[in-house]
Amino acid sequence: MQSKVMDLSLAIDRFVPSGSTLVTCTCLEALIPFAAGHEIMRQKKQDLTLIGPISDICFDQLIGAGCVSRVRAAWVGNVITGSGYNFRRAVESGALEVEDHSNFTISTALQAGASGIPFLPVRTALGSSLMETNQSLKTMTCPFSGDTLAAVAAITPDVAIIHVQRSDPFGNAHLWGNLGIAREACLASDHVILTAETIVEPEVITSDPNRVFTPGFRVSAVAHVPWGAHPSAVPGYYNRDHQMYLNYQNASRTVAQFAQWKKEWVDSPSSRSEYLKLLGQERMDDLALKHHLLSEPADYGY
Amino acid sequence: MIWPLNTTCCRSLLIMATDHYTQAELMVAAAAREIADQEVIFVGMRLPLLGFLLAKSTHAPNAVGIYELGLIRDSVAPEPILTMGDLPNFYRAQWLCDMADMMGLLQKGEVHASFIGGAQVDRFGNLNTTYSRNGSSGTTRLPGSGGACDLASLAQRHIIIMKHEKRRFVPRVDYITSPGYGDGPGWRQRAGLPRGGPSRVITTLGILGFDSQNKEMVLQSVHPGVSVQTVLEHTAWPLRTAPEVSTTPEPTQDELAMLRRFDPQGYWTGE
Image (tube, each protein chain N blue to C red):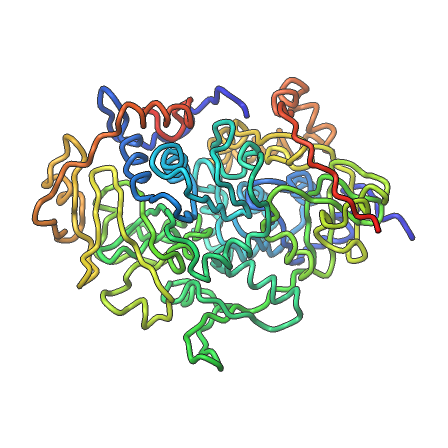
């Protein structure tokens, strides 16, 4: 079997062409692939469609960098402060098209995509304005009960980008913590890019197959990116850097402020290792886990 | 966790504080009282997150918390958390799973109560967190639904927590992100929603409920130091009031001590 390990820059160059539909930031607040987002910004990708649930500031950054023409998401902003200023500016100026979902409908759209069917019914959002403004949501009558339901059209992204704790060279990976919509996002997508805190031997992954969240044979690229989800948290590796999110609120308030922030944190550090130098060892030590909790081994023998 | 935080760049959530407690602390204590023991609660963010922790630590020790990112826990996290995705919230959790699992439980009707916030609410409890019109200056784009639309659509009841300002308490919202009672009695059933609706609105000025017949918001209590007239002036429709408007109970010393353990820096409940 051929190794899928490659530099993050090559993975983005090869699998995220301009015009792609991209699902990412799938675990809501944890495990957000910021390193991949910043690489997309450095490569100046354009006309992307971003798909996600609560995306936190990664979507706001990609929008501010001019990479995005369309968003299909439930929420774009900064979780602990509120508004995403780049998102607001882009929508209010007409530069960005938004298909408004709820967390449940975006998950359902990807579940339909993952299952190879055109839609799935839910009972959420009925009567809301989402049903009027989102062309992917329609009311329907249940053929069995006669109930009114909301039909959610399938979404099949070109590519999913997911940050994981550990992967083997072939894309078999362990993800733990909350899973958000990561599983349906990967199964619905044509390509999957993993960024991983560590690359491990296949035996590590096969020692615990229940912790695998998507089949390795569907993964296209694996990039080794330690601290690749900072400032979001990665269970088992580092805590959420709240201060970075607080600082971003002011750093994105105007176009000029965002340009300065982007220069400092995205353009100047040419790679994630340069970014970590900028972050500094002291900060990384602050964010490191202070209380470890190892799970009991599970016996998969026969 | 990184403590202390430099929070000077954050807008204060508060309008005023008393000598003994802040307005946000009063609101969190009120939110906690909406939770009964043994209930399954879809927790949400910000003040409701603290309200759930307070309820768990006082009168509702057996309440179960569901967090939409894919997490169930029935105990208080070992350290203060700012968001549901902070790692102490994962520590010895009962279940870490898909968001779809949480939404499935919600859709089946197994969630007793949920908490949501909003930028704009109307007399029938419809909430808007998507777009608001600014008169001549166009529209303001807000972050969107997140899970709020789902919580308002599918929980057995939901509790709204928000600032009480005239521009936020409007006769009719510009966009229904999270459905309340629509245009009145029977609307939810006609829309196909299986159950639920808002049961309470906890604001910076008072606590409101909904008339069981016509589904309109009704003022039930005012916070200490707030007059009924002030609430009416900050509401952009002729707000109905209960026959006897009471005063919202102040948080007890025990509640305040507990709360300050959960939010030691006062990030959500400080001045």
